[in-house]
Length: 358
Image 1: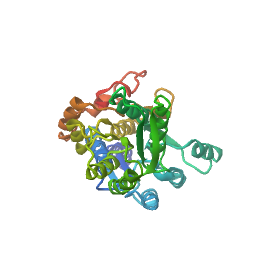
Image 2 (image 1 turned 180 degrees about the vertical axis):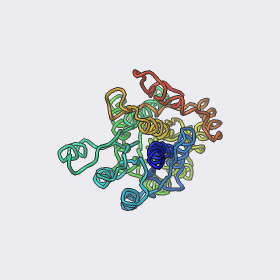
Image 3 (image 1 turned 30 degrees about the horizontal axis):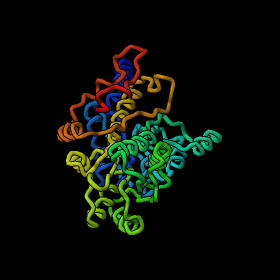
Image 4 (image 1 turned 45 degrees about the vertical axis):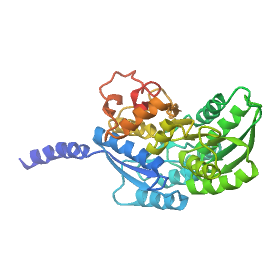
């Protein structure tokens, strides 16, 4: 009887262990007060709740050293998560991938993937680094390109030469680099647009405000202000307004983000161009981690890296709709619907057309 009981327990215990919720830690690179990244975390939490997973968010407060400190504690601690989701902000990913080797924690990259040189270095030393489960990045280069195109389209046809100022984020952040590259690519289509200067605002409203004050003195005829995020756009906008300029009328502003403030500014016309939807990458990551925990392939198309066109133009009508969606705790989305669970073997994640991208 004792032997039978032991055999019974041996069968039950693995099942009990497997019933534990899948645990995920998101190493958020942003400030814990920063709308861009707090909205990202909130979307992931909604997905985690829907999918029966646990999610803990650790904010790095835009400090690479703090990101690495968090990573060491997470990967070396007694209660490690099943998955760690990270961002290659300020090029921190390779060191975290190295630290994770042998930890048993699976890694997933979002928003900022590895640079080509980083990927080459990791591939050249396979014994030093863990393997990434996958990477999801946005269409940042295309978004930067579209922003400038849409701004120029709103100028009078006979406007003549036009001065442009650009506020990029951080030089060591791939998403910022790609957005700037897209903007520069678009310049080739508009010889009348003169890029006067690109400054790096560090994603900060205050820093962009101070930079814009100086730039306005240098380039008072500026009519276009391109910004890689909404915080910098609002900082620059404040400087222009203090100088007597009217956003949306004699100077056009663009930005990337879908914060309530940005959406309202798009509705009232202070932002002439807005791109948003970045946070849905976090939701997709949670869906894919949920499936991996079930033993389902997440590289269903044979790829480990996906660039998803989540950044999309937001007109005034869409801005109004998104404001209402943001008020719903679950964003009005059934995340389970996008899982491969219960799907045929040839099921592909509908990155391009699903409502998860709104």
